[in-house]
Image (cartoon, rainbow, N blue to C red):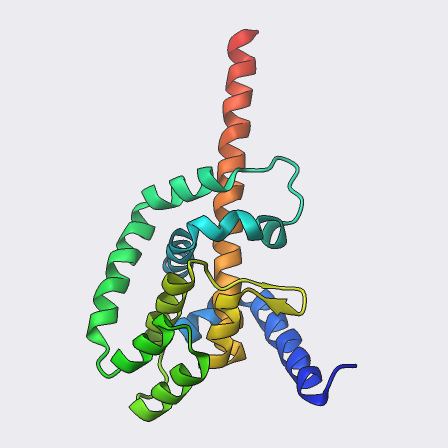
Length: 205
């Protein structure tokens, strides 16, 4: 039987997901500090690159059954070569150094110690902000070797850690951006393959 806390959390998740479905740029963009969809999804792509090795394990959970499946390795290769993703990865390194006072939080994340990370973030007196959200989500993704992914009534270890550290809304926003970035990339790859197939058929006529 679900306890009352879990019930309230599930209701909050449903409410946030409804907001994200209606306006992912507005909701996730404000939480993460992006005003343009291209920048937002490039950031999601950078997290996918950080979690490249774990991606095959969560592939179907994120995309479901595709009529023309794209391999994870192909997707990651394209993302790594995407100029916007490259810039975002470099920018995230600069942002990590620019936010002072998170050193002890980074240590706790490195140790995968959820309670210590929460305590150190609270003790740091650093106010919540989009850049702090981005830096900490990127750090958690790097340490766990996977992007934040939500599925069913739960999520992967990265998602759970981000949720505990930054709250449900931030974790849901990050997971939604990662999922949408993956969908966009696989959709583009699928369209490219269909175009190639049509060209091949035409040339053989």
